[in-house]
Amino acid sequence: MTRHEADDATGRAEPGATRQLAEGRDQDFVGRRDLTHWPTAAGRRLVRLALALGHRFAPHQVLLLTLGVGLLLTAVLAALVDGVYDSVVEDDGVAELDHPALALAMRHRTPLLDSLVTGFTHVGGPVGAPVLAVTAATVLSLLWRHRTPAVLVVTTMLGSLALTVAGKAAVTRARPPHADAVPPYEFGFSFPSGHSLNAVALAGIVAYLLLRRLHRRWARRLTVVLAIAYALAMGLSRVFLGHHWLTDVLVGWALGLAWVGVVVTCHRLFLTLRRAPGGAGATVHRSPPGGRMDR
Image 1: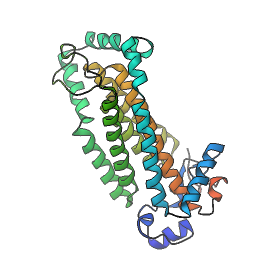
Image 2: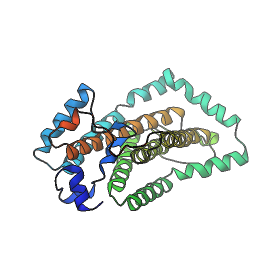
Image 3: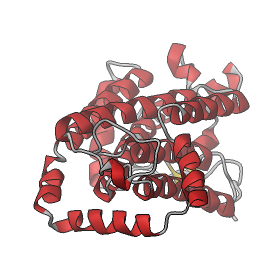
Image 4: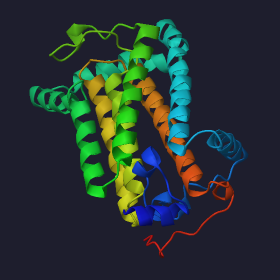
């Protein structure tokens, strides 16, 4: 997008980092849903707070500030999983699924299946996940000629890593016994599952970026299905291999969803501030520009 196009889309010239995140007007929509439209009272209060900050800071600075606050709140959530761990220790609630789930996985293992699942789980590991994230950020940024994919993907994955570290330090739960696991064995704390958290975070933010670009309903639905399938498969692979308890995976999914929700909400606030500096976009629905297709 040229500078003239960016100015036309926002109604004003945008300096510095804000312009680096600028995209076309149609990127405010997922299908026919306006991302700068906040129909709930809570959403409008959040927008008013962001607008108040916008009088003192540039939109990209508000984005960074809200991301920081969101990460802190999500980290607090990760630290509060002690209650879930208590459930594991007392063998009640969701923890009753842990041992039966592991036993079920062990009954279905075969040498071939073990090898296939091990190869797949490495994709979401300490090496595979960063490679996937960097690849996705680079390809989408170059393809669309915007920094938005790089900023959002990198931010999401860094936050995901921070949440994994905070959660493991807070709970310090041991992994399933190595006698019940498929080698190569893993060490370190088990709760929550970093593979599961990272898979939800990466799949979620990439899906969000793609949904803003896809005009066909079937393509958006396929994107959501593939993102969910990847996250589910990655988490279940950890249980199948005996590297995590099912509870670890469930909490990893929950924290990943929470963090992606924070990133998406912050980006929507950024779009709202940049597109409607007067606040109109927070309450008034706009039609998709250019007769956007939605079939």
